Image (cartoon, rainbow over all chains, first blue to last red; front, side, top):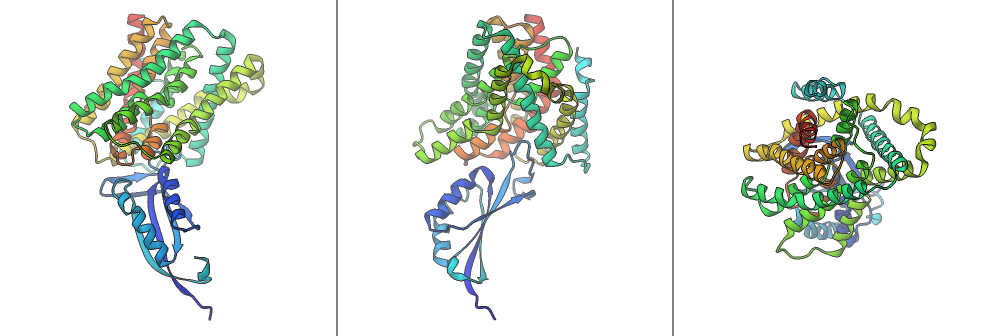
Length: 103
Length: 318
């Protein structure tokens, strides 16, 4: 059986214009891998929203990263002050990965 | 003229989009197609404006309209900010963000107005496309200054990101670029591509406004941030700004159609370039407020009533 190791899976739902800033925070704590996932629609305390390519006004993106516990904690510390002002949705979960040395 | 405008297919398709969204129809324009239509319309309007300026040359009216447009875009946010804080009871940051939207412009409102005015024999001068491009960004600077007044300066990296967003914004690049292409190519150069950019223009605009009707009405239905004060301001601001725009256009000697177009530009509110810039520069500002006001109320108001009102006003005082 292939050996797996524990890592943290970090997901951040963010308004698309703010993605570069969060990627910079990730790089600053030495997280070099990230993926962006397009989000179609959603809803929350402030009502529902729907992506449209024409205005891009309500565009949202999920940033997905896998990192070690230490790096994940450093990233959470870095972006915690922005959670309210940037209206972020941040989740961190445990995952098992193969080739753990890559994260 | 009012009946003509309200029964034009362009407006009726917009109303159909609004109606479909309000009855929660599953009508939808494929996103990639809608994006392609917006690129087509901006390229076409830029090209046509450039060709008209190539024909007429750089005139004193062009310079006067450009200065007026820049001045309006810089200064209209001041008035909006005052009303938004005093009557709308918004905080400094939200008011600054909303004010920036009302100083900037809506390309779709302008394209629709130009089409309707031209159909009624009131064709705005080609240089108004250049004025449109000039009015996109100064309001962002004014809005940010108002929102950040008395607060610490932001980091340089954030400022450079914002400048890039403002000046490299796709709609600004396409509009200015196609205007320059039209200016260089001239009427003769346009002939080979005319069937694409001229013949189908009105039909594409109809379908695009159908989509915009859906988007605007859905934004309004989904919004939980608006109250009676903000709804009233989203209608009052275009009325005030548009009246100022028409008056200035007439005062500086623009023809009636161009004065009406300047009024419509002043009355319109951005919902493409400015929201992205505000999200970057003022992440604390609530997008639910500025998007709902500009896209959910002011945009439909201008399309359905504003264009007619400001063209009538230009005819009366022109």
